[in-house]
Length: 313
Image (cartoon, rainbow, N blue to C red; front, side, top):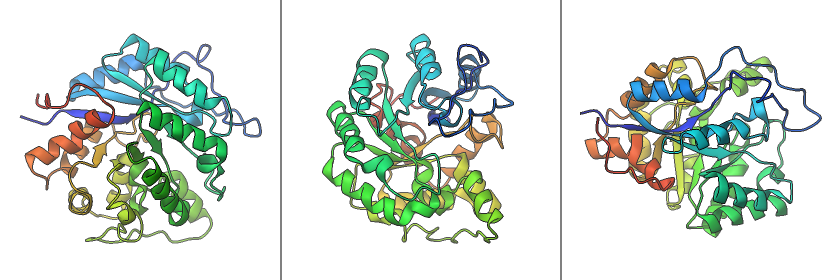
């Protein structure tokens, strides 16, 4: 029997552009262009049912909708047994902590995502200003995970800061998007680096660049690592097998700290069937029990769903 999956990183794109309009994060940015594809709630459910995915965390598509989380919230209200919204709100707005508490209480929000939309901004206010720290405190009080995305050029100084915060809120799950390591570099970051004339190469096995980056979290058990299509893009381009990377991460951090997410709605190089197949291939060197943890049960525990243990189809 194949292990069931829990998709921790699904982006929705509505087909109703009058109700769900594109919005920039801040007034100084242009209104985002309308994507040339959609991933509606109904379409995602069909894909999930077809490929053995029982739950999905709906991660706000910030580069389309900014801080307007309406579509993922409305979709989760319609399908509360399948969808769990992860919102993005302005970390510099003093109203955000109370707004987030209301969303958790009234809208079933499952987590908060912190994101810096521009890799050339090299400060840490977006995640550690006094106002932002109030959000960490709210999430810790509520027990809802914080997901955080870190650009490759920020790893050297942001990862130690995350470690400090993780130790301050030792019961708060913190999930690092795309693993927060060299193999988590997005196509966007890669293009910026290559346009600047830089030759980008990935660190080879057997360490994959872990020792110089996320290894600092080996003794921080409330920090988790999300493997997505972005990781697969870097691995395929480097001609490196994904199973070795996942095996190495389990060896360093144990089997309880890795989760899988498709990144559907953002990374669209492969269709959903291929994303699921690649997730299973990435788990090929794990025991059956550890496969279930990586593909499903760890996320079910982190997001406090009641489905851990029902992981076969």
